Amino acid sequence: MGFPRATGEVARQTVLLLMQNRLLWVVGTAQLALPALSYLLGGAIGDRHAGRHDYAVTTWTLFVFVLVPWTTLYCGVQAVHADIEDRTFQYLFLRPVSRAALLLGKLIAVAALSTVLFCFGAVAWFLGFAARSTLWPEGVEFELVAIYAQAIAMAATAYAAIAVLFAARLRRPLVWGACFIVGLQVFVGNLPAKARIRYLTITDPVRRFLLDRLNPDRQLAQDLWHWEHEFKPDLIGQPVLNLAILTAVATALALWFYTRSEYDSRERE
Image 1: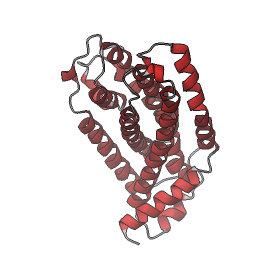
Image 2 (image 1 turned 30 degrees about the horizontal axis):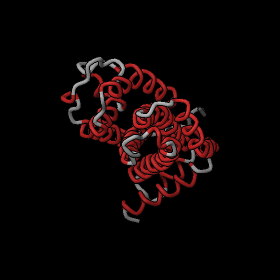
Image 3 (image 1 turned 180 degrees about the horizontal axis):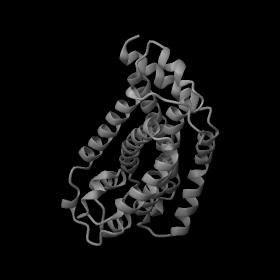
């Protein structure tokens, strides 16, 4: 079996295994209530110009900042680390499929599943706001959904790469992943633009991508980047390139460790 075909088959099987996880079904089912919730929220706002602003801020907070990181991290760790916990990796490594194809297939599966799940959520969340025409005096901006779908796909891919890296290298990847999200994403990612350490985060380039595509007013920019009191367009830089480099480096390191390590069984997390 060739490398592309093996990678695709591993991705397919990983998706099927992950879809047996109750967490994903709980999250997916809960998202069915999002149109009703956002519709009620839109009624409580009562501001004729609040549709664009509040969808942008709440989608950033709920999906890009919270659900995508934690869910993708969990799925990525389960996809790779579970095989090491129960020693089934021994059977996988004995098959005529390269370790690189195994890891890439798992990464692709996690990124794709998280992207589809939360793009569905972003659409469902938008429907409630869109149903209240008073929030959109200049017409409903359906392009917001496409912008956030791109941001979710970018974030999911990057977090999947980080998750498989931690699972391939570290003995307690969920703990390290939580430190990464809370430490780097929450604290460092919100530092002012002059702090170059922000480039080590996923939050920062995704937010700069959104600020570039949304063309926000001062209030929206302030709400998306609390610690940058005077946002300027020249602070955007090259967020897609920054995130692509981070994802590529994490994937390369994960492949290096996964293809060269001799694994023993690990404690279940």
